Image (cartoon, rainbow, N blue to C red; front, top):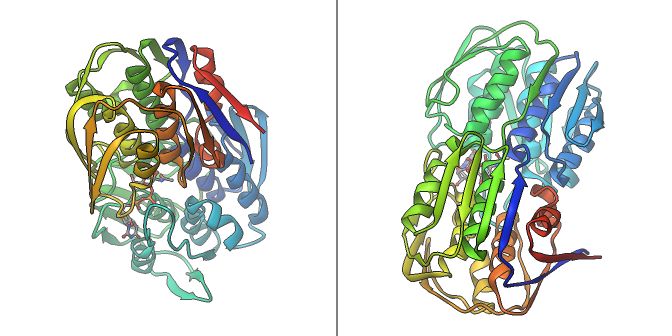
Length: 417
Ligand code: UD1
């Protein structure tokens, strides 16, 4: 298993290119199942979740080619299987995103129940209730969700709780339904709006994506299209934290500061020096950081996917900060590893109390989810001595060339096979 070895203390100087958003690319790839024609996706991040999705789509009958290392051509002439097996769903929960497209295109889908994961229970009951409202029969047995429908029928669906992939799954399903669907209390995430853009290019009639009410007028068929994925706001936020902690002068390019508003304003409150430009953000480290409380929230609030990285940042701020996780019930697994590196963190239910500034020292650390691993890399960049981050397959699921990007701006970081 690969590890990262990081020697802390080097300031970060230079430019980093932000990749396409993983959480936009995954639903976009699933959406290509809705048409028999070819869809070209550009600005894809070449991360392991994309490779897993390619595997899944190929099993369902798609031809998937990567003509370059940031684009894919996908074509599903015929759906040859309706099943997302346990082996794939257990490595990547986002596999559930094929439910909506399969059901809409061919009236049948069978997907392994995702079950729990490192950050909490994560059920898909809201996806299922939505499909039932669209007229599907859904059975959950033998560890699988099996949905069938002759043709889905438009309906009025109000989500009891905001769900990102739930909104995406239902939006995809409704594109081919008979009649009009409205999704209320929909997720506002930019990735939802990006997916709607792709679907509209494919001939769907969606309005309101990016607001809490989305309207989808069903059509009979969808066609091929070409679409470029939006920049990854979580990758950008992670590098902003790196620049703020390690010092130096770092510029992130090909990103969208408009999607980073709450992260940038929270970082500024904590004393981080950030300049925004068109498609770029510059962070200059070195100024003392101060504590600032944060509560994670659905977009446009502070993303839960930035919580672990923010905790690493707060270990370097003077004072006590309170970090409240309101989206997932068990998302503080990184805290105990940060403590092993010298951080002063206490967990009380959904709250973490971080007292800084701590002098961090290198250690061998492990994390069991993607963003938790990122927070350990951030801590390692400022720790005295060498940190070994183990089990980096989590990082490889969602960060494209993380160590190469950091090394190019001066970090002492190596991958050990
Ligand atoms: C997506 C993101 C993930 C991010 C999360 C929250 C992708 C591929 N993943 O995950 O990176 O951390 O949004 O921003 O885009 N819930 C239910 N029932 C459901 C669905 C969700 O109770 O049917 C709950 C979840 O357990 C959680 C909350 O709703 O507490 C939000 O989850 P959701 O927005 O669905 O997360 P994902 O779409 O899985």
